[in-house]
Image (cartoon, rainbow, N blue to C red; front, side, top):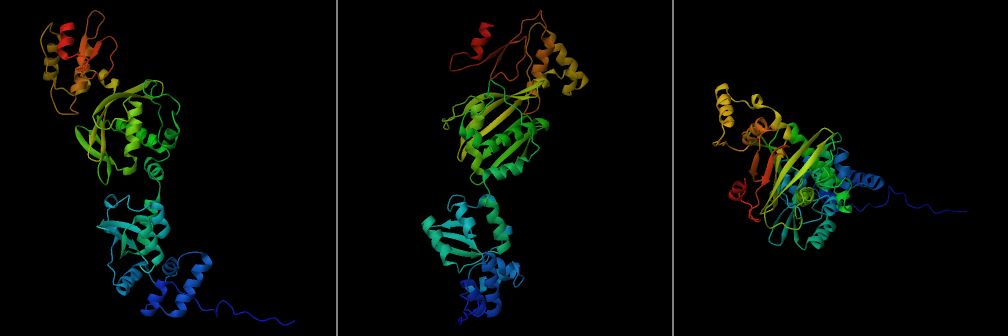
Length: 393
């Protein structure tokens, strides 16, 4: 039986992709080498450009410069780009990952997009369809572009998990703030946000910070701790978590989640094992790009340090002790945030707190709970002002 031999794959004509044809026409790659690279890419189910740079035929740097020349297209070095300044909502991250492109900016009805292969008309059409905008290509080195695309394609949860790590100690919030179990499916889904918030609180207490500032901006989200009166930047979580983080803090602090137009104040408590609990005062403030949240750490242990731990000079300490021992008068405690005003006042109250003494305080708000002292929270709306409280005293 005679069998007709079919042409082998080696002798079959190879339809090179646009980039391959352009490199051959420009004399940057010979036809046989281009066909061999394309065939290997087909066999290994990778892209022509990935096989080209991976095989060593051309480095990513050389390829970017040669493609920029051949297509008369501008070239960009992505090492000089800032992640926080890239537009986030112009093209879906999954589309960018699938096409291997990076959106750089928008001007009018045109989108500036970084690519390693400007001959890819299919990618251009998909971007145009998805965004409704015309595409202007900018050439980027393939290896750098791939790293950027992979990084931006990661979910917020993955980024937060990377920032938090695996060794974070998860402590429970007290029952007066939030119940032990998750209250909704969304809370379960936002576990990375919960983990991130708890890590920030644990870190702040460990670093002896007085406040935590969560600040949303147009292209970044910043977390700062106030340590020794000075604000220090400690983290830049993804901007996408700002609303979820604000909602989480509001739930724990018993604030209105739906109200984002006016400032709100609340409290929450965090248990550290069985022997220690730390209170936090929470203040929210609507800003141009979301709600800024400041959390003040109210550690009752600091009020029990004793007068010797506050750092007063011997002469100042003696004058203060004499002043608070008088039967009447006034002691003014002033200073900038984090200078120790609250701890000084509560330490003095702790020294005076004896069974035979009646002590009442009017506070706005009450920061540290002290057994044996009648603490009154001022409530202007209800008519409980400082003057009304003092009159009642």
